[in-house]
Length: 308
Image (cartoon, rainbow, N blue to C red; front, side, top):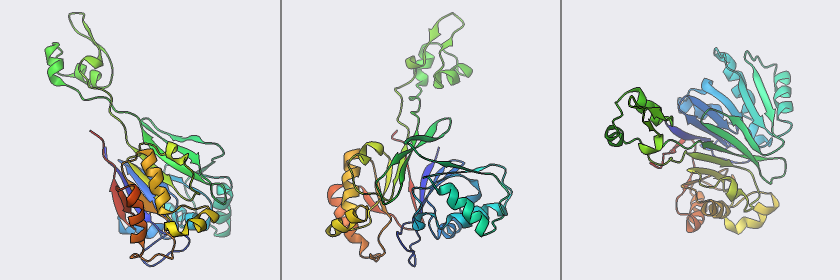
């Protein structure tokens, strides 16, 4: 099952040529989840030829303009196609007010159901059969949430030679064992999945953090992520500015990534003061602490692979 993150916008504060405002789309087979929806989100969706009408849920970190200004347009765009499923929107208090005010002032035509769920406490906000999306609090100038998509563990590897050695005929019984169901053979013997299966294999994890003051407890929330998308708004020389504005430096994002033992860190939400060339400073600083760091850029695709 494929799991891919698409960086739709990597900028913070204001859009720049070639740098839309922060937005990340996560595609898990047929499910599409959007994290923040800054200005320019629709442009990247079109250029990547993504099936935007399949977006089922949007997760908003906070209600600063550079994270939500693309939302009204996206909601209106979704009315241009036949849509039977509702759109779920998760976010901090007042996100419902923002959406409703936008609908009224813009006289938006919406032909599908929008279900808004405001987050007031940490925990699972979106539950599915084999994964969940969890929200955790950040520290910004207003109520702000980080998110993590966590898959359930997968069954271990199935060993056909062990099944054959136990006299289990190929067919439905093999399928049951692979799904963790014990089986009874014709001779009365009962075989448990553990006799023909390896140990459970870890599911994948995606984490998204922007905007926030650095604090070490974030590492616990994003621990063991296969991909950690985190703001790295400033270089370390501007740490005081970052602290005053309740943002992070790229180096601080790398400290979190190392402490959390993530596989890959993708920096995002850069200050507009940095040109594309200047962003290399952020990357160099982060890699001194956490070498598997990349600079995200608009329309970058980052796959999340299984460990085995």
